[in-house]
Image 1 (cartoon, helix red, strand yellow):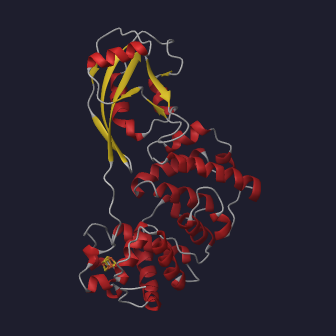
Image 2: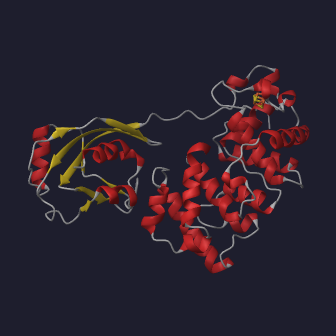
Image 3: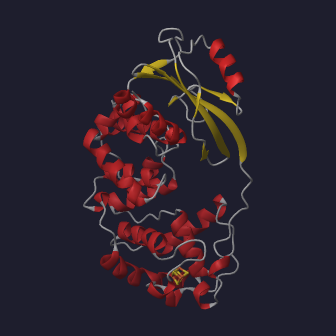
Length: 359
Ligand code: SF4
């Protein structure tokens, strides 16, 4: 491969200073205190969704309700979706449950201590398999996520596009060459921790505090802002929606999304494509068989950004008199909205507005 200012064999020089730094500065996190393989698995998948601080309460709540793989395997889908509510990429948690069921059947409820067998489970890719194998089983397997790619590409001053699978594999091989036999899990976590807390993205790395700055070619050549090289992102498609908060006394209309596609099988508020006028809204309410008891009230607008699409949402609230007229809907109380139904964060602005509007 081209552009490496430090030969791959010398990358090994980062191992000791990195572990020394990790021993002093690693953040204390609930999934780092002698974690079980199951805890590593759940925390790593959650960490792929959001920031460490945001994962903490999700992880604790999850482990409180589903402390074992067996309990996860038999949990109702509504429960796991509720526990995942707000983390996004809900298919990941569904795949995790499929994997949990296989683990119960095939391995008596314990994750296998083998990288290849882990990789064979639904929803477990090279990164997650590497994390479980190294952190929980001390196997010398790398795990390469965005943080690791940023750190190593900067150290090597490597200008390959890190979004390519072939490049990720190339990095996995480089790291495999230098994995320490003793503490492979700590080494992987140290690299990720360095990326998350020191070698920060977007021109903000704290190189003066970096334990491996003396081995870093990008630091030496002041090319940090140019690395890592990433593929150009396609612009997101914009979609407009009009959301309806329809109240019948102390209940609000919600409905389940289709079983396939974006936010599959999660709960949502009735809505229409486009931003509709009050007149158009009233016509649609009639189509839905809804009898209005009051006037439409405009809600605050909101937007939500997914990977490929951005929702721009307007909304109306209305008191209705139609509790039994639309059989496709569920009428939820305030408590049920908070405790029972998984409503994705795309609708969180409207959920908050709904909670404040309940009588
Ligand atoms: Fe990242 Fe700076 Fe450390 Fe290089 S010296 S690895 S750019 S923080």
